[in-house]
Length: 412
Ligand code: AMP
Image (tube, rainbow, N blue to C red; front, side):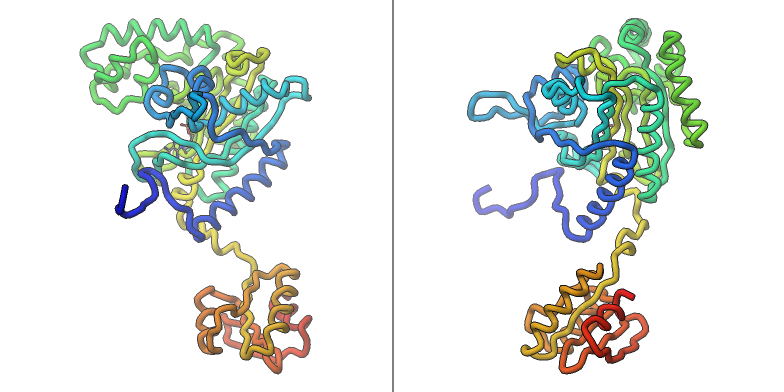
């Protein structure tokens, strides 16, 4: 490092103003949508005890086996930068006795997550997620509500998607099915990739996610969990589907949909975007009815999703986030004596809802007009001996008689 060029670490990025604006707007609109549906904001720490993720996400998952940023603090504790949101939220639910609150507890959050993956377009080591979790009810209307909310977040961001949907049943069905799938995989051992073969015992379901040709061929005839759901789980899934159908929310059933975390039960879903290339998953989630109990709490059903903020913005190219800015005004100060008038005018413009700035860098009047162009001002107000308002789109310039008139000329 000594003397070397300083750069952001591999797989991370700086958010510069243009992107920050789009991110802020995405956050604001999502927040409005979620709060209208009764979801409240909540935040958990960015690092947690490593054991939380090992227990919560699952020892055999890619995330826990190879993607966590884990470190020891000065007290010798093993901590991990959070790779996902659900385990932390469930920990908080238990720690704060939230099962005593009226159920379901509906929470949303936005923040950074960390996974040590090979960086590529749309895949980073620090990325941002919008997360929604609903705990304390297994009502199918929650599954449907959550899926529709994510569809709406994506739709209002101009992201084209397709929605894949499946059900993983309960832990018992999944365990039994896992045994059968292991036997199926062992019988086709020679076709499989080394990675899939080495995980037959720990995580056979992931074989469905493999890109390896032999594995894919071997999986073509594999049994599907969705064909073995118990009546109660099957009924739950039918109800979720009926609610989505009634709401006109289109989906494709995908019996091979396997999410990369161990805690899922019943409904699982993923939104893919055709505009994202290899990293096509833009958001996904599902039910995790056993997780709270696994983390030491009372038996508590839960359902949630995570959407990648960077991927939403990548897939929403052409959305024109900047077109949504309020009217922008630039106040030109022709001479130093006019500074306090200009300052008052800027305050009044801002109070009236305009985005207003004034000259603050000692430019000539010509330089100030250039600056107004640069910031794409809709109006310039020249605060000199007289007050003049120039409409930058038409080029019309007219004198106004008071500060209030200048404000209405800009905001009216
Ligand atoms: P997951 O829980 O793995 O499905 O992640 C949920 C969402 O987070 C994904 O659909 C992506 O949009 C986003 N995401 C996950 N991992 C990354 C990453 N390494 N870089 C950027 N976004 C990611």
